[in-house]
Image (cartoon, rainbow, N blue to C red; front, side, top):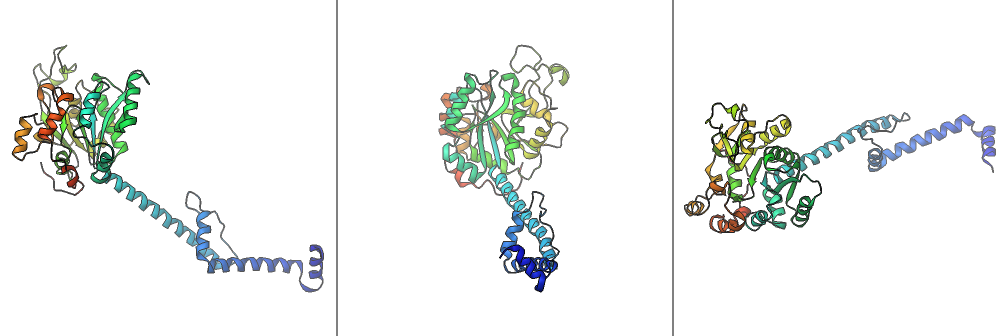
Length: 378
């Protein structure tokens, strides 16, 4: 029997065409009601799969049963709950990142410093899985920081690329390397590190300085409640106006009469700044003035700000016998170098000697909990 004949049969004695359509429509609504009432999981899945990026349902509200309207209204609540869960997930990830990057340490290096880097790797900088464990469990991230050569993709850049592929311990900056560009490199480092890691402190150390990471971490932890803190060995050296001398200051006239000294600032071998100060540098990097000397530039950026300067001599101990005597007296140094060389003299040769004599206990880094909240100290 054809479809046409069935319709004709219904129209003749049983149901009109309009009645058939009404019956079908009512059956459809009843089926939808039964599905939403008996299988809530299916309803949720259906609503979730049809929700657009703005969290609004693409399904039209049903008008054949009031309970369908309630179901449609509940889809907004489901979407809101999903958003809350996603937000909570992101919050947890953010907290984990904050813990993982409690301290970001930059080891300033240059293309010609391969032997220095190797001496650091062989002594105080954990390698391989230990370095990853240090990041995950102790919240300390350590990287050699370097920019690019003036010849993009040249032999110097390829050498660093090969070294990075082997060790995986570099942070590359969008910066052209050069001694007279250290102030620019400092700005680039803080801006880049701040964008990568939400750390409590950002540390800069030269690759010819010996560091005891656990002692340094404990030192910084004592200042974690301070919003804007600048930690290092503070000095105020003379402003050198004479051309041709090391550390010549081309803008000496800005500092007053000949023979005047700089404002107090941390010596460049090692210093640390808190998150708020790194944020300030990142935001204002394009308008921060660069002086010839990188440590002077950093100190100048904080003039006029409500910043606490912390002069901690544990960050600038001498090499043996100085750090050795202090260690024997229970005063472990966070960093050691030779002032006359602005780092450890012949560091590639002597780093191991300094490490054996003045290095902290090898378990100090793994036994300390540097993520615990501690009271601030000066």
